[in-house]
Length: 279
Image 1: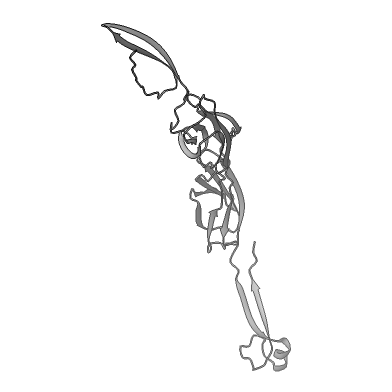
Image 2 (image 1 turned 60 degrees about the vertical axis):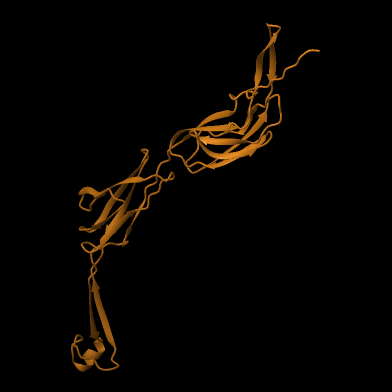
């Protein structure tokens, strides 16, 4: 009756293992090579029906739909994660325990430029696979820079020369939410030119009556620019000279001047006023 021996090994890598069996018999030694094939699942992203676009605006939603299949010799797997990564950083994850579709909806608030988009199946290596080289799909997308839009307002709407400290302020916008820089320029009514600084707003005491041409130049962090010119009209102060007079009939009947300061109760009167003209 022959002897038997048992042995085991950790089959933690899929593929074909070559095992050398050595047996000592009556002082001699007999060896035999045995090939053992270890089958395993093989997770692969086989289809991406909604891939990332070549270009996406900052603040838009990135939509991706992909099918994850098991093409290995063993169909049973442990649950595993499918990750969406942006520039090698995980941003979303979906768990699967069998082949199926995964969908990602991700608010893309990344800065302008090129970005790596990657879908990774079995992201945490929970499944022993026949191959670990087919678990990901890589795409590239670009976030373009959109031009800002220049605009400004001022208050009061009709500034008075040498009296109203006009507040002029930018209402410019940038569709990408970037910080803006400002440059204010002007042409005064007499033709003089100059600048009002580089702040988002300024206050200025206008010293000339007439039309001021004010231009705002803006620029975002990525070189996008825009400009706008508006006319701010500065008025002279209205002078109101008014007096209360007797009616012509009343003054004539009583033999007094219309400008006599004394009035009787119930007497009618006339108001005369003069104002300076606006430009």
